[in-house]
Image (cartoon, rainbow over all chains, first blue to last red):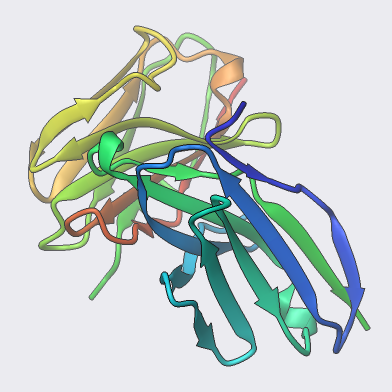
Length: 111
Length: 112
């Protein structure tokens, strides 16, 4: 079993739709969590950190469920420009600075 | 801030040749990571450094791969000899105190 698992998708949604991605992690010592976005043929870029209390940044909401060991990303009112691959990232105390990346979920927003 | 700088951006070489990829991390960052990304295997961590010291190189595929970080502002990843299966995008990333990582634009390597 992979340490960080994501549904690869693809998710194909119309503009304006709400879409949610989940990511599960297996290491209970995981400490910090992030969502990255990667556009085709580009480098991954930080989208948002995920805090225990949940956090929101405009149309994006991230949540953490430590009991069930998953994090989620909700995108409201999706735009064409949201089309990308979304990577879930987990840091743990036992990995001394190393981040574990999920394989990513691909989102395509269509007109 | 210039961000993470990688060179070259593209490299095409023939099987058996030596390839050297370069990275300049963000000034002040104390962690540096080398990743490889392919369609088949996704993003793989090859090796990472903390304060210029290699911490975990378990992701390095084989002895043909080596990485160095002689100082806080420079790192190299070397493949010798290169093989077609090494073709991939190689990313360098840096971070401060185990926080979020900032990636360079990557080096697209093609080994013929």
